[in-house]
Image (cartoon, rainbow, N blue to C red):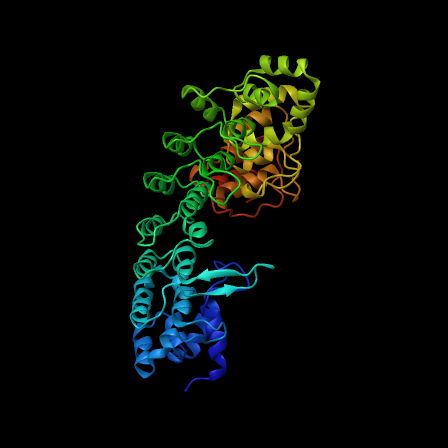
Length: 450
């Protein structure tokens, strides 16, 4: 016998959150409940589905075949929805085959592949969450995604294309591209844009090979190509999109990829555009940004001296310009800007939430956080304040340490920036050892922290 009062909390703990991000939370509570009452996994068809128990699902359907399409449990979901939005499915890829079998049993018993639920936590506009979204964009389970698609699941909603391109889930992307119900042009544009958000070179390549055009914006205000430049993708991703027909001069609102690249200090991209015969602007504010990014101090000064309005507009954007260039590791534009700015410690007022750059960061904060070691050295040599705090009270050294142990770009970590900051007198206050990276722990220990 089990305590029936545990059934509801077990189902809630076993499903992804409905009042928070679906990728948040853990299985700890569900595991604890199951350990205390193992029979909870068979207590209902919903419990069997959410735990990937195909044998128990079959037994329930043998007793009552209509359960395959009957909603129940605390969320009032049908069994296939409980299966596809299971935390067990999401958090334990080794068990994916068990959930695929559960879904197969339910589909063969008549469960609709396009089932799901309506999420009322998205403000005034309820959001439909399909079972396919649970499989493809929450659990990133390619076999379950393929099974649902084979049974007619429609991938063209707002959630599946947006989230399935995350987490480098290339098998999921491939399954969606081969779906019997084809992705629309707008859905494909969303997937390519999101691949750019994730700097996913393989994902971009798969989508471009499928024929997705990088200049089609879909339901977004700008194109995947412009997004790749906005998000500071590597040059090889930008080049893939250029090869697929992207136009650096095509405008979306008040922006195009060429000018965005210039204001981000992307010397590498401007050089590639020029090599492909793309004309660079020769007047106005954009021309100043281009000259600065290409390292032409003489041309920048000449343009600014000729037009007071352009000069004023340029200097208003110069702090953000310097910080973006620092984050991209571009020495040429920084060399120009350091000759024009009143101080090397200019503050980027708004920062950049995408990169977790706090408001009022300096170029040194940004370079340290994004592991741009040569730029860190350049800025220190230019007199940057190694003790400055960003808008969240963090120093460049703290950001350099975080880049080594808690960033998406730890693959390029080196002790170089930490060493340079320590040698420049940066305080190690607020940094706990061990950091998780032996090479910088040794630097701190030699400095007397150990």
